[in-house]
Amino acid sequence: MVNIRSEREIGKIRESSRIVYETLSALSEKIVLGATGKELDQFAETFIRGQGGEPAFKGYMGYPSTLCISIDDEVVHGIPDARKLQNGDIVSIDCGVLKDDYYGDSARTYAVGDVASDVRDLMRITEEALYIGVEKAILGNHVSDIGHAIQSHVEEHSFSVVRELVGHGIGRELHEDPQIPNYGSPGQGVELKEGMCIAIEPMVNLGDKEIFTKDDHWTICTRDGKPSAHFEHTVLVGKVGAQILSNGVSEKAADYAVA
Ligand code: MF3
Ligand code: CO
Image (cartoon, rainbow, N blue to C red; front, side, top):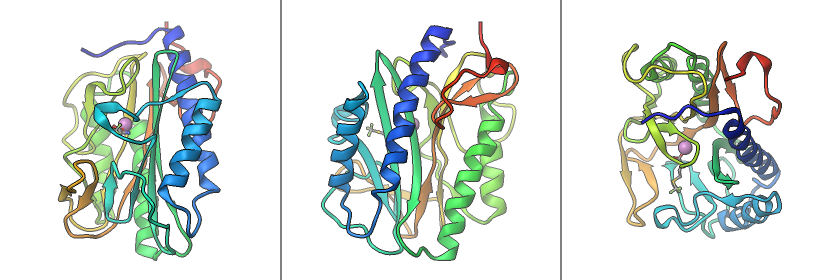
C-alpha cells in the first residue's frame, strides 16, 4: 500500500529530514585523513539526539550503528569501524532519523584528499543521476520513470547501476511501498501521486554492476573491487514537481502544497 501524507505528516518527515541534512552537513568537516568511522558515528548519534531525534538505523533489523559508512568498493551498509580514512578514499555516509514517529533518510558520498579523476566523475554522475531522478518524481509519472532516467544518465557515462538495492517510500516506517529501482523501462509501476514521500537513492559502480555481501552480513561490496558511490534524498511528490525534504531548505514551497 502506498501512503499519501497529510500536511501534518509532511511537516514531521520534513523535520526528520532536516536533522539528517544537518547531520550530514556537520559530518562533511569531519571527513578528513585519519578520521575513523566509529568517531563519525559517535558524533552523528550525539548530534541527532541533541536535535531531539533518534538514529533510525540503530537497531533496525539488528543494525548496530547510527550511520552506514561505505568506503571505496563498499557500496552501502558499511558498519562504522576503527579503520582510518585514507587519501583518495571515497566515503558514502547514509543517515536516517526518527523524530515524532516519522522518518527522514539521506546519503552523500564525500572525497578524502586527492581522489582520482575517474572516481570524481563517478561521484558527480551519481549525484546528477539522483537529481535527474528527483525531477521525474512528479504527479502522473510512474515509479519506473525515475529509475529509467537514473539508469540512462549513469550508462551514458559508462558507469553501472546496482540492481539489488532500491529506493523506497518513507514516513511512519523507514522502508514503505513503493520500491524505487534505479533502473528500468519507463511507464511501469505505481503512478506517483501528490503527497507521496519517497527516498530516491542511486548506487553507482565505476566498473561492473555486480555486488556481494561481506561476512558481517551487512556490508555490500562491488564484485570487481572497484569504487561505488551513493547519494540519497527524501522527496515529496507535489503538484508541480518534487520537493527535496533533506536538502536544508526547510520551508514549505507553495507550489508543492498538498491537500
Ligand atoms: N539508508 C538505508 C536505506 O536507504 C537503510 C540503511 S539499512 C539499515 O534504505 F539497516 F542500516 F538501517
Ligand atoms: Co533509504
